[in-house]
Image 1: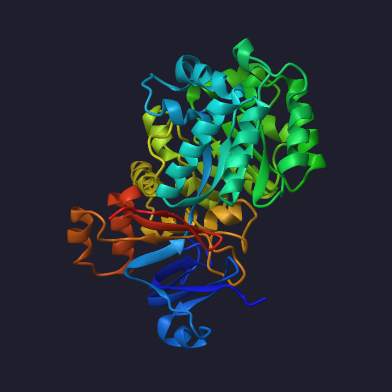
Image 2: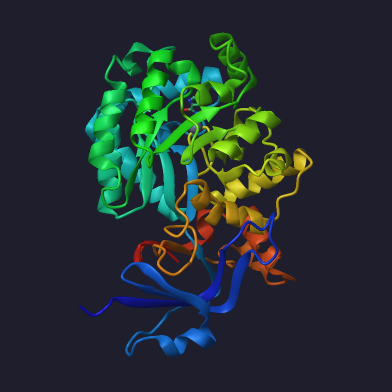
Amino acid sequence: ATPNVQAYRASLLHFHADPAFHADAHAWHEDGLLIVEDGRVKAAGDYAKLACTLPDGVTPADYRGCLISPGFIDTHLHFPQTDMIASPSPGLLPWLETYTFPTERRFGETEHARDTAEFFLDELLRCGTTTAVVYCTVHRESVDTFFEASEARNLRMVAGKVLMDRHCPDFLRDVEGGVGDSADLIEKWHKRGRALYAITPRFAPTSTDAQLRATGELAAAYPDTFIQTHVSENQDECKWVGELHPQARSYLDVYERFGLMRPRALFGHCIWLDDEDFARMTATGAAAAVCPTSNLFLGSGLFDFDRADRARTQLSLGTDVGAGTSFSMLQTMNEAYKVARLKGSYLPALRMFYLATLGAARAMDLEGTIGSFAPGAEADFIVLDPASTPLLARRTKQLESLEELVFALALLGDDRAVKATYSAGALVHTRAA
Ligand code: GUN
Ligand code: ZN
């Protein structure tokens, strides 16, 4: 069969290393060309060098004036919470009781779950997010409907059924079977098309020791699945975990004792971890999902980037919708930058773009598959327009450097900056002019 080739002309930005630790970590082609063959990256480089390699009859789409980046990767959010984003509450635990649990109740209803999943995926693509690591609810139906919706669009998505069998309302409690249901869902969905499964104990307080133990055994039985949970988000929560697990050295240690720290384990928040916790994150190959809009919204605390970087813990960014206040990874960078400043750290915009692309892919052990324009990578990419709003246009007319350009996009950009989104080479969103 003749290969199916497309090409895109624009400025190209992607990464091959972490700019916090390596010089020349990024590739930048001011007048660049991205060549896609059968849904995968064939080549990415200078237009002047690559144009002559195009097969006869292939004319590049002209996105000059825009910047093409790998699609953003959001490593922590909850699709059922789309319907309760921006619900006011004085902190995590009352927010869960008042809004979250009642909202999640309806996700055993397939029609309701499907409607929310479709809206959620539309919103991700509008914001330029091509891969997300997603919490469903305790209901199996919530997982089936989510993966059916993402399969229909051929998206690279990670998701799983929430496991929870105590300290929650009866209508959301796993009555036995939670781990067995998870095993069935792994068999059904993990690596089917572009779907990947995440074993999803909500957080330590809502699982019995028996459930955590069985969850750790499941994670060992399926070592290439993901694990996702919350850790050390809020000080009241940390105190509670200390009371529930007095024998553990720390909150994070509860997960380690139950076999839940390993590569492809993603821990949301990680605000109140100490140096030893970060060392354990690094040693086990687990990764942090840093969720600044959520942490500021709930008043949870400020993630310590310098402490994490001293331990060389793998980092990524999450929106944490619906505690997070935006689906946009650009707005998430905006808040991450300010969180870092308040902690005395400094996050360059190029580092933030790394964290939202290759850094996340590495945290997920998916380097080479998503997050960069390495040859053979899946062609999930976005077209960012630095003139998409009057203010961005005015600001980006007078720039000195690449860092200033991506900084302006991160601080001032949102869904409006995303002109187009492509998944596996197919156009899945275009912004109306
Ligand atoms: N901790 C346990 N569950 C949740 C949740 O749904 N959202 C957040 N932000 N934290 C949690
Ligand atoms: Zn969360």
